[in-house]
Image (cartoon, rainbow over all chains, first blue to last red):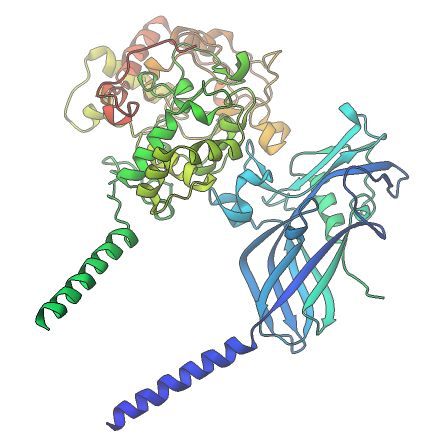
Length: 238
Length: 352
């Protein structure tokens, strides 16, 4: 009889612990805000000017976010290593990522822009990584980590298009970049600005006239990747 | 009372039976046999276990023209079984809207041992290979989205996917994995050469002499048992002025890889003509003439071929006899790979 009561007690404790942890779980919303400078990005219609003074419009803007790590004020980390998200400027739902966490205060967030090498070499994936999503090089296997397409009078390509497809997972051409942002928020949301102007004028100056197209891994893709990494910042609430 | 409890017990039992048949999924495992003396395959079967149902689905997809934009081009329209799944008598294959491919369709065989795919090795996994021909505008010219939608609208496919994967979900991943299952089974290991190696047959004199010459002059690149070392080499084929195909350089962007292409397997070589990455060699004789006379070595040409490859008429004759022993009729006529519903392999036909 005593053995049974201990077992019952044990079960109760386990159940209570599970309930307790579960009760503290809440969702944190990571919201990406595609912008050009200080303005909200308007696809197709709005004309912008980059740091080289080149005019441009944006038709398509997409990027992969993966390996998200939430860091709390005690430097504890919660890692979401198997979740891949495709953020698309044309799809507002995709700009909002909800993650379950028990952290009360998020001190910082770390994430990878792109897709790790393992997923690039281990065959056909599904979900956000479905090759159907148009972020996949079929002839030279690999994911396009980020994509910016539009038009610019500075481009000498047909229809004045420019098209940047950034990817590359092999040694020497790795275009994944890790972004760390301090948040210090006890809100349930983290607002992140993604500034397209940084694609042209971040760590490297990239001119549409000189480089209207990037469609393969390599040095240009890696330079663009550096710029992309610098395009993320925590949105300042007035 | 007893009757009521019996009825309840029966209802519960029937309930369990229904739950069992609907909830459980028991595909029939398909055994992959590694031919004696061959290395272990590189393909990771754990992520895509072979089943009879998966193979059947893969075969149905392989022969279905709906994977192309206009319904005319299935995988099999360029990969014909009687030609070891190459395109019979075509230097380049036909694609959507009267277009031609840019390279010669390779034979499909022993793919489980192949690490990279295409003539330039640009594709790193069998499961993502079919995406390239399906979406290429000169081949099947279709989008993955349309393929998935077309299949979803066909109830017979819903059944096939359910029996292969447990539920009727149709997506890119499942299509590709089923195609892989079908193609992985394409093992050619039963040619006369194989039988001789296993001690079940013996070469006639010209075949034996040809084999000796082969081992001396060809086998360093066309390595047994696959008759390729899977490397990329420049054999002094000048660039075609229209295709302007730089080969491996397109993938690595290295100048030193310009004009390098994968060493093709010579298994079933007698039925996979024409030869070369762009099919420029009409016959085996053209290939021999290239090696001994016509090649134009450049700075990337293999060191073994810097002075071409001297071959006498006698050697060519014996080599030809040997190469014919690599034809595996049991593979070319295996009805397991024939279109669904065929009890015979369809005869050689000129499809386009």
